[in-house]
Picture 1: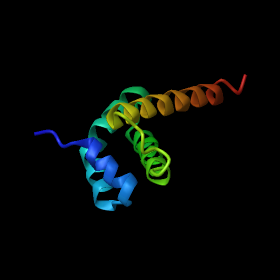
Picture 2: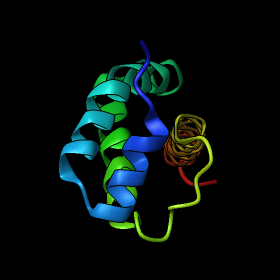
Picture 3: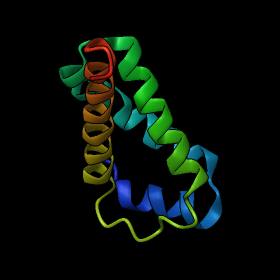
Length: 97
C-alpha cells in the first residue's frame, strides 16, 4: 500500500512533525535523485539540488500548506532546479557570453 503523502505533508505543516518529514524524505529521496541525475548527470549535484529543495520545503512549510500534490510539486521543483543548474553551467563553460 502506498503511503499517503498528503497526510504526511499535513503533519509536517500543521504540527512541525519532524518524523513525518523524515518519512517523506525516505519515501521520495531515491526517486527524486534518479530523476535529477537524468538531467544533471552527476549524483553529487543531484544530491545537492534535492537537499536544497527539501530544506526549502521544511523552512516554508507554514506557507506551503496548500500544495495539492506534493509528489508533483517536488518533481517539478527538481526539474526546474536541474534546468537552472544546467543553464548556469552552460553559461560558465561558454565563458559567460
